[in-house]
Length: 272
Length: 338
Image 1 (cartoon, one colour):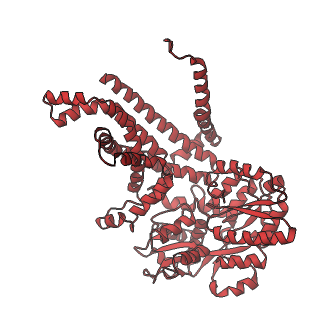
Image 2 (cartoon, chains in turn cyan, brown; image 1 turned 60 degrees about the horizontal axis):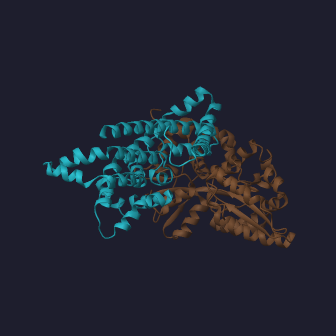
Image 3 (cartoon, rainbow over the protein chains, first blue to last red; image 1 turned 120 degrees about the vertical axis):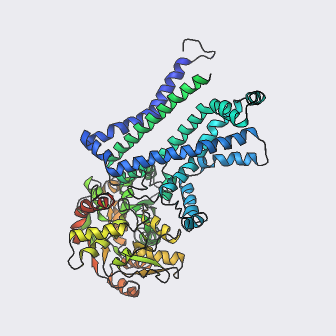
């Protein structure tokens, strides 16, 4: 901040930034943080440690993490193909990747459910193999993989574009095998971006509601996600209980994202 | 109609509802907002048209009744959060009681209109697939091995609470029944349920469109409607040996009509529901009319049934606390190790 920018206006810009962030992000979060305490400390503790709540939290964060883990390698592959190759229909494929962002999530949920239900196109094939997707936690993962994909691809693409082809060629001329090039040259350079993509997909998955409730089955203790429990509590007019659960999700998400951010920074430093 | 898409988002719906409600009315024309539960779309569409004609003739005023639909509990919350409903027509009295407790509606609302403020009733039936392949004839058949039962989540769906109570009513009326045997029956029943939709329409769609499950526990009117929409040959309606008198009540929202000055027409709208004309529309939409003359006309559609009522469970307040509140019977069903 000590170096003068070429452009004037640091003061007003910072003021606007702070006001804007406060208004859009901090204010709603503060109201969320204030609400639960009308239950009392013990009341909040009880309301967030019920077995059903813990199961829902485990499911929400677990499924989102697994879906993000699945999305990282496949997202990398997609991004790689989109950046490194030119092929007919590339523009079309490029727009398709963004579809999960634009599609109302409820539509995605209904479409996936129709596919994976026991009588659906895919579900009917999986059923004889003993694989059930719709109305199980697996279904939740499928939905979260769907909504999370663009986050990984779009995070990786710009980094891949900047990755010089020369580095790979140099590795090859120095006798590295393709696998070695990938492991020692490409992946380390991409690691911070991979982590960022993972974090974005994870965050998206934890908060996802619309697509999941259609495919999840919503059975307590088994396939009931935390956001649905929040809605259920609201519907019982238990605003404080809903806010308490929201606050827990907020704190856990924030801690995870902060951790990933720090990790990403350290990785970035190490590579340079 | 613009409300329909907004209501699920309580606060937003509330805000926009306020905007729409305070818009100046065009020269003496009047609008009402009827906030209702999930499966009444078709019913109120027909009734609103009839009421508009009736009111035009009677008061010389053009009235447009807007509708909003969703899960009964969600709708009550939307009204509580500020959705400007002139009248509420919800799935169960407990949801209107919640509004009364917070001062939006007078406490004696259920005595302000005839028949517990319930112009028509319904009941809970079992919908099975063509030919009834699993041989479902009564509640205990739902526990047969391999039978998958579809019913929505009673935490979020008013209809599901009626389903739950109908099954419980049957279990309680069995010889040598105790609280423990009734609870065991419900526990076994819900172990046959593969998916809990959040609303009655969602459950009907799971059953009818996704072809999930062998039997749907449903509002009688929704069961008939499913037969109408998906073909009478697709499903059969099974009337159990005992069910429940489901009373979806109606009320004027005092705080809103006083602010908007719409009390007169809102009151007239609810009273209109009791007229033979509206009762006939209700019967056509598979609700059970209160009007005896109309009921007789549609008698062959509505078999006599042995029914328990909400009073058999001590009224909504008691039932809500015992079965559906946190830690209630429904929660215990899903709590492991108990």
